[in-house]
Length: 294
Image (cartoon, rainbow, N blue to C red; front, top):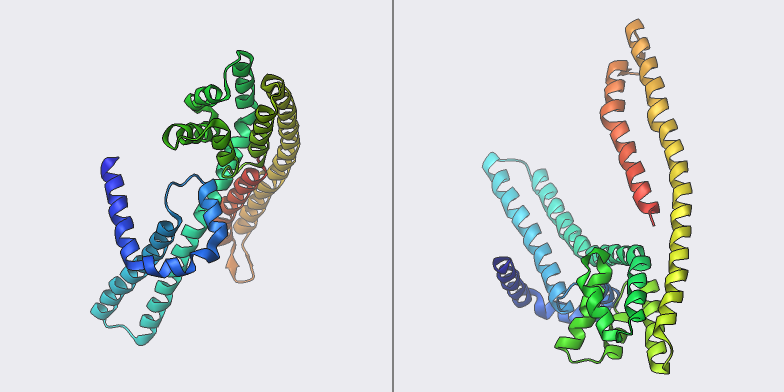
């Protein structure tokens, strides 16, 4: 772990020396990426991340170009191959930039999903701790120790870190986390906790009420998802179980009799269906289930 950290810091240092002056001029244009980097809980300076992104794109594309160039020179190919190699290197450059640009957004979205999924259980835990008259800072210290709450535990750890390492009071630490959390529902909860503490309200009653509302919302989402999942299952059975069996049976019979569809042999068509079309459609259904999952 220490070796990986040292390598990362070394790589970051090289990237900053090579690309630091360039990215500083353009970092203001990527405010959305800066916000996603915070919500993704990636602990790295924004300018350093941009430098690493640009340096990695340059390194990958350049390395591919020179390795490919050495190979092409060794086998004495035509100029068209050099043009194709240059185009591929350029594509790798932009693809690497795209991966680095999209990653914080994807990570922030996954964190938001984890927080929203575990929130009904974590808030019940907070309500139980509040019932014991524990102060707010102790509540989040206890919550940070329960890793089964996923990213909510990570959010609680960040609140505790701000209090212990930055010397912030609990309200400022909560406000700081509300500005950086990727989950709107968790942000609303923190804002309600802050308002209740400042107004001298009953935090225990607030958490019990929030736990009731969020648990109800969670159960409704699960019920809606169950209905969607049953519909997807019916479509899956019809399209990817019954229809392929019927189609393959018909093609097998027609292949024995003899014939083809256009210029495509029936046996080749069955291979395309079994080895390519069906796996591709199964992947599509998996992505569909993942996309509709709450």
